[in-house]
Amino acid sequence: MTALDLVVMAAGKGTRMKSRLPKVLHRLAGRALIQHVIDTAAGLQARRVVVITGHGAEEVEGALTLSAQLAGTAVPAFARQEPQLGTGHAVQQAVPLLEDDGVTLILNGDVPLIGEPTLRELIASCAGRNLALLTVDMPDPTGYGRIVRSGDKVRAIVEHKDASAEQRRIHEIYTGVMAVPTPLLKRWLARLTNDNVQGEYYLTDIVKLAVADGCGVAAVKTADRIEVDGVNSPVQLAELERAYQLRQARILMEQGVRIVDPARFDVRGRLQCAQDVEIDINCVFEGEVSLGEGVSIGPNCVIANASIADGAVIHAFTHIDGKKAGVKVGARALVGPFARLRPGADLGPDVHIGNFVEVKNSTLARGAKANHLAYIGDSEVGERVNYGAGSITANYDGANKLRTVIEADVHVGSNCVLVAPVTVGRGGTVGAGSVITRDTPPQALSIARGKQVSIANWQRPAKGAGRSK
Ligand code: UD1
Ligand code: MG
Image (cartoon, rainbow, N blue to C red; front, side):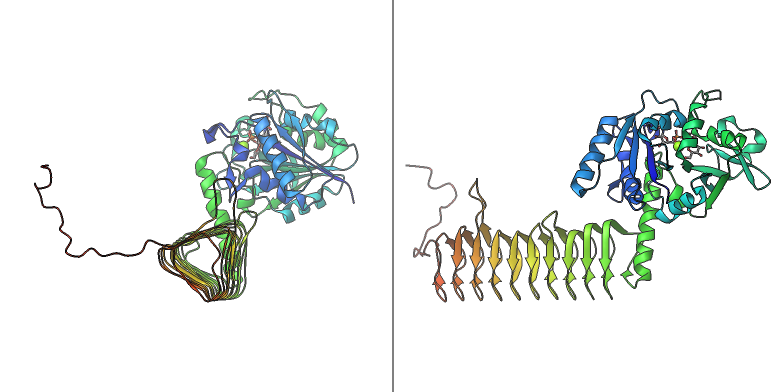
């Protein structure tokens, strides 16, 4: 097998995005456009990845370096292109970083959905000796480089602006992706000129040079427009986002997932579903999410980095964000509506978390319930605990996060404050409105609030009276 090197072009300005952010850093499905390309290319096990940067170089290089470090993968090499004199000039900047053996695969940083199988096919067509071009038939080819053939054989790519009226009628266009034997690439790049309408060094001119050198030119035509669609404007970004999401939805539905409306469904990461999962409208899944058998997700939920076990029900408007620590929801648990589960929330089986309840960095054992308006943070909650409406753990003293332990079968009344560090003993009851600052013994009723008094025959002030001495 020939060694593979990758060049990803990302120096262009992206004028039509009308944004301060470099185009390739705009997000599709939660990931930067260029990150999609790099992640897909990772499957090809390339020897080296060279990213050509120019406009917004520091931001692009910084973002890719950070994401590689976070993922524990190799940081790509960067080659700066300043000024930007065309796509051929862009690839010339990578030449010193490319070894002489092997094949170079050239990709565009703003074509995010290119697929690994297509790239493999292209590399196979290159076979270490041919120039292999990825092409597609475009209903409206305006603006693209046309694939000019004589008979079957590819003769050249002619850029739209340089094309004759006859050539402009060609619908087969160059997608911006090619695989080239590296020594030939280097030879051809050295011979490029900017003698064209735009005064640029066109990478696409190497096709003519290949033909003149008698090198085989292979065109691999994809039928899948979405994988070669570029992003140039916010409208195109949104269109491609929808196309991508619809595709994710279809894949899941084909596996049996019931999605109420695939047009109102978003996965920004990876969603794994077991059998008989139902997902209502307007849900967003981010990072790594897994849904067990029979899980039901109500409308308008945001779920990030969480694993939800069999039979759990997530009611409408619930926000689950596990970030790094993750969130676990146990089997048959009921969560929401309007619940919030934060990093480190770990709910056991049959736990109930109701409306306006927030849980952070806490474990709730089997059958524990917090049904209304409550906060549980940095806590360990035992089996069958009932945690009353309006109660909170005061887990932060202004400097440190402190732990609360609520042992099994405790009943915490409404509107209590459990001031950590504190332990509520097994089977105990905390009276409503209590501020608990010390550990409570098992089985006891603990009350810590002002005693109720009643003053008989109390006279309320009357209007106009009471001002005089
Ligand atoms: C290019 C192709 C065209 C093809 C089209 C597909 C050339 C000359 N033409 O045209 O045949 O149909 O892509 O989308 O290659 N870039 C740089 N440095 C530069 C110029 C561009 O890094 O100096 C990068 C851009 O950031 C972008 C990519 O190269 O990622 C393509 O550049 P773009 O200007 O979009 O090329 P097109 O004119 O669209
Ligand atoms: Mg373009």
